[in-house]
Image 1: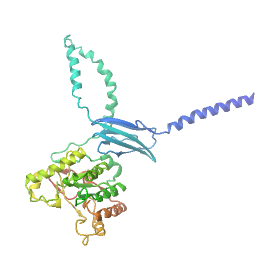
Image 2 (image 1 turned 180 degrees about the horizontal axis):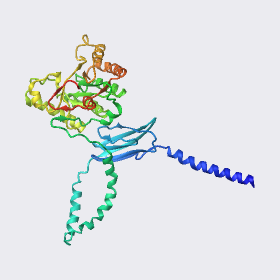
Image 3 (image 1 turned 135 degrees about the vertical axis):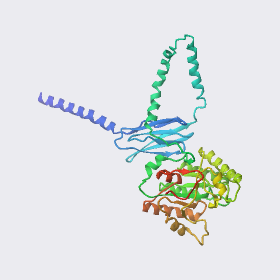
Image 4 (image 1 turned 180 degrees about the vertical axis):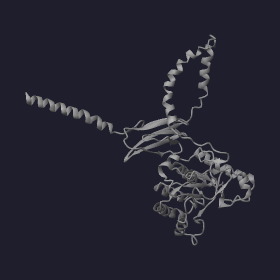
Length: 396
């Protein structure tokens, strides 16, 4: 009898242990609240990692121009749809990585028709003058049960984008989530800029710009590319170079429509060339305004009267545009190593020696703890405003 009792108690203990351990191991399995989400432009959606013990690091894995992230908490984030396209959100918890695919669709053009249908329903009950039409409104109480799904998301996203003050510029592709995740504001920061792309200075396409982009991406750095409008439309390869810059989170900017200096140009000519390039950049990115750098960094009084954008000058010269016998790859590296916190570095994406110098420069900056970003990111990190019509050489 005692043996039988012992046997039964052993079975019960095993059953209890099994009952306890199964849920614990299951509880440790982390998963995303959604693996795929579809949003319309302007909509937001909360994404969460369930059963996460550690803090989640959120980032946009691909398609930064289509979505943005805000309202980051320990295990959740709010995804906002910016532009039609496909993107992916990455959730990193220690070594574990989870990905959510995001599809952004066009905003519903027929939206205005919806409200007009609702009022007509309210007009009909106007026959019984007593306004108990409000008693008919129980119907909305069914739909509001769905509204709470979106409402909390908006509340949870403390994304108070400061309103722009008169004359202030803000790059629409600025990714504050990337800055938050990758930049230490207590360390030195410099902005790297590249002029004259895409492609090369000649008719044939060269891949120097693509090589520079790859070097930046390999070390998690960003830059601003000042593009010549006529180069972008020259061939499909040039357009692809600009598209890749957008996809990889680099800033695209206006370097006029051709290489001609504008310091002695008329107001009409300046405006025409900038507007043409802006239109090309807008068509490719969906953004409405861009930083400007003058071709050959040549400035005249008329430019400041006409240009409705921050005019980006230079504080560190690579001098890569000089002949090889004056400035070779090693000299470019030595020149750029002189950059200090807040500097805007001038380089060109159209020279092979520059493409060769960039990886060496980036390795040096990494070793020295100097972070490399775009111009708009530099000013956002330092909490400074970019103002239109003002020439800016560095971020003080």
